[in-house]
Length: 388
Image: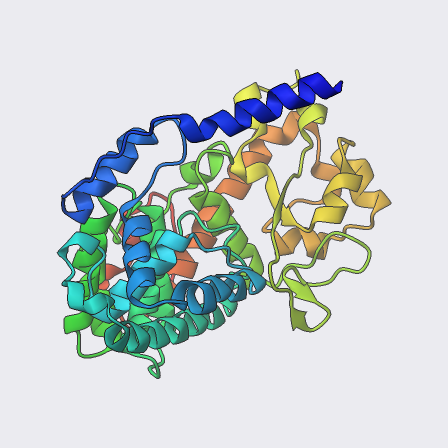
């Protein structure tokens, strides 16, 4: 690039000062401004209502976003939970004023004297929630089907911080994820649930109220575990919960329990989904839609998943000394000599039935203490003999 070309480019930069810029002052409510930004940014990052109101809080509380809000997002991430900033902001208003529709919140709430106590309760609610979730093997947000239900859990643990019986709350969380409680009009559903929790006299009563909006009596059928494992995150999540509760060990030589580093919980653990019968091994030998069946999936750690690759199951089970005990921890009851392509369909049926039975037992155990109407009705499940 010669001197004249440099000069020409600098001159073009200088002439920017001479450009006319159209300035329009918009005198509307904040929700109208949100809509304007949404339309302007339809080809880029959508500006949400939470983005606008977070800006309002920042203007009324200088330094709060930089010194409090953003650092706490990092705290959550260090704990394995990479929470969307909008969701964290929703949980603040959920705890502070039991609302998540920001335009309906009185402007006085955004002042420092109301934000600070609400923020303190919100932080404590998140810490309690993460601590409780770890007891069930939820060590990161990675396996969660949805983060939205976390807002309700945070509000519940703010309302009833010292009460036991969190099994029932986790049961609601699982069922809410199963039935997509917040997949539609999430703000409407969230506010309904927040009001229900706020009027309850104890945690179990609150959960019973929340369960009325879910088809909780519907048991889990074996067919759910015959579906493609990539078909939604919930069923993978449930498989992981079952395997974790069963104390399953990883399939590497160390055999450490999944989710642990020695005797310590492994923050940010992200389960891997391994085909028991490897995909390429089954290719052109069984129907393509059967290969990715959830009943053909084991939950293991990331390293062994790569090394197993696409080998004949019988060979890798022996090579890596994956014992029958480790298979049984994954609810695989077959002997290693039974792993043959000719028996693949029989294997899927047997494991799907076993997983459905284990899943219903799991839900029944979590829901002890709740009214029968809130619990799975196994009489609706054909061939299920669970007695929990």
